[in-house]
Image (cartoon, rainbow, N blue to C red):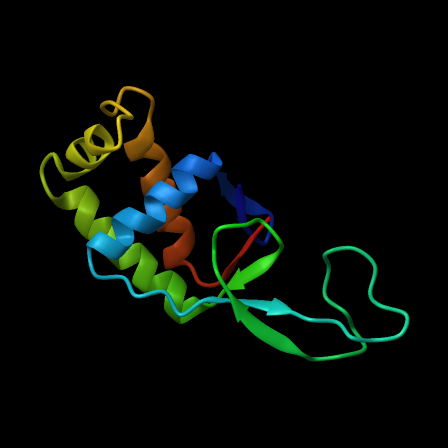
Length: 127
């Protein structure tokens, strides 16, 4: 999963991204749902990019990488919840152990800190 904005981004495995979402929910984040464009034009837009001919959107989940947009308000709330989890002593390690992923030796804290920085900066896209 690539989480990107203006040429900067964070890469997480699918497990890592879903784990980050679950951890954030455990620390109070209530996801609004990503904004995804639905193109019903004839002919339809090509590829996963925005259609310049229409402006139809829907809310969807965060589990896939279909170019959904996590809006600024939701991104800030996600960052805040993850920050709480990272600040609590041993919370990340306990959560990782709870899903059988072991401790932080593979750099989870660093990647989630990068995710907090990205999400704190405003909306981003899941690709």
